[in-house]
Length: 403
Image (cartoon, rainbow, N blue to C red; front, side, top):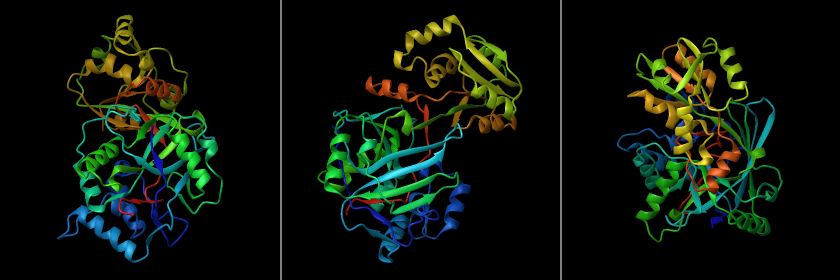
């Protein structure tokens, strides 16, 4: 079962409010935000996770040099004793109501490939891992956590309350708080509870795979045999799961006609923000998907033949997951159309309206119940099915492999 241990965290020492030095995960930062984070503080964590070269050093060597310099200057320092770290995110949910996600950060043992203790919940798109591997080799540090969901009930109630040692507020208004947990009884209880059931990777599949590769290069390296991980209970109350929509590029001119081969195409108003919000807010109709192009919005109701195909090709656990229905029913009609992926239906529709994409299919988010059912059946959802919100900040705590 998953082996989850405390570790000696490395943290910023100059202030308890870390808003100016923390960053989102590296893979959601565009170039504009990268520059803004760099300008926010000379010690912003983005300089470590998305380093720039500084000749004669390449980017990765420069990140390692910055990390060493910040430690030497006292900007960063190691905590005096191993700890797990309670992590809390308070935010407004998609419904506008206040929400909270609570979990715990620790050092998760990388499993043997046959163990089955840490499960990928989605397929992953092909992606070069040389970048993250080069950074891990150079810095020997887990700079940002992966995020796993625990199938063990009751993890949340074991998290001790206490004043946070560090806080941050991000650009979306989410309040992040980090609380070291050092009591031996609390640590033992958390470790036992995490070990009680498999973990499902919610975010960080590629970083997890990179860490496994690096550990394989270094047999006997205890530091490389673990990865910094945020564990959150797989509980409806703890999670805000949002959809990731499909943007279509270089689509054929007769796209609606092609889709009509597998679905009834019903016009449901213009491609305008208010209409898109209304449609996404409606209760879902079985075997329908929403479509938007520059001609407006449409409801795609799958034909009986298409629904039979879903029944034949999809396991029961994925039958009502929009991403899976898209892959089986619609994607074969798209020819050489290229896909890109984005959350926020209104933004996606606006990109179509201004010509940045030819069209889009707007998906409903996967539910916690669907995620649990697929995980328990050891079935992976399609790539880019779920967008867990909000994202934990990079820089609240680092894990150095040699510490």
